[in-house]
Image 1 (cartoon, helix red, strand yellow):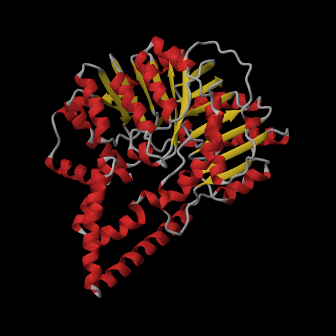
Image 2: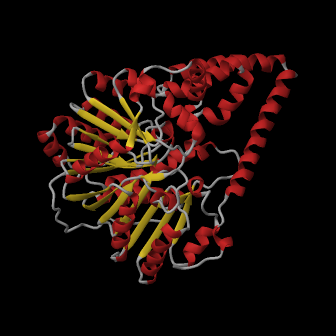
Length: 513
């Protein structure tokens, strides 16, 4: 392995602290200025109260999740001055209009390059109407098509996925695309970096994207220079800035690797040591992933190109990255990679999970590192359990964020009361984001059952049906349940008054966690 000086792999926590301090100073200054102006102007103070009432009525009538409305409504009613000021800065969707326009323009050019035929959906519908309807929804509103001629391999541990990825990277001939929320320039990334550098030296085009907040605890901005010195093109998504910017709240949580447009990887794991159990900050880290080979990789390629060009427009012609494949799959299953964006009003990630729960007839099982869900998701899970469906959710036994874990546990009692069973992963932190329904359909990807994933982040996942990998996902659940503590009886008996009050307060700010 290449040995680097410690100074070259410092993280950016200091930069994050500086940015946070600058943003707080800006917010405080604006609020104080507004307070001062109100004290010296009766008219302005009256207008502020009127504006607060108008905003409350407007929020009440908006077609957004109630959990996002409630904190703003309470703040505006109790503290009109502070509420109006903060909502003007951070609460309006118009605050991200520039980014919305940018992504619309890029998608207008890229998405038409995906297949638009309905033959695969018709074939799936003839086998399973419920699955066909869900797939049709993803294709119409994603819009990401359903594919056949694609093989799916499931990895029950992140280390298995990393090993397979290394083997395929060595065989790359034309291009390698990698997009990850978090990258740590440590042992787990070291061999990958050497392979990428070698392929770049051979003339393979290598591109790498990382999210600034996701990686800020692992690397600093010098990482880009080091990658480019190896011939690896590297870009950072949405770098933190000391200037107040609402878009900072929207992060790239996707995990994608594409090799020559033929092989693709995705799943819950990032490229950092803890995901592969080289370090153990939260006990054993449980994560899963997928390898795709065949036609469906085209959607992963387009998803990567969307983000690459959103950071900096550079591709005038992307057709070299979307080759026609001569691949013949081993299986006849259905595969549908899709991506979700916080910049539109189609909550694709949540709606797929809702459909999995609503369409299940015998069992539907989920695993998620965080359980912070909407009333709609709570109702869907509860109703499925009341219909007699076996509904189970696996959450971590050792949390990475204690406050978020308390919010997660605050949802247990309501779900358990309606028949949902909750399991906490005793060995450590379960970071896998997956679900399986009736042993026929499954979803594996980056999308947590929490507000950040479902409403605020750029995400991706794969819906697949009739593949051997579906049974492998179900088997992974069956092997994981015995490692968990079934906390269902504990939460069936209710909570103490103090615990309920604490969790109610935490749930008010849940959309921000």
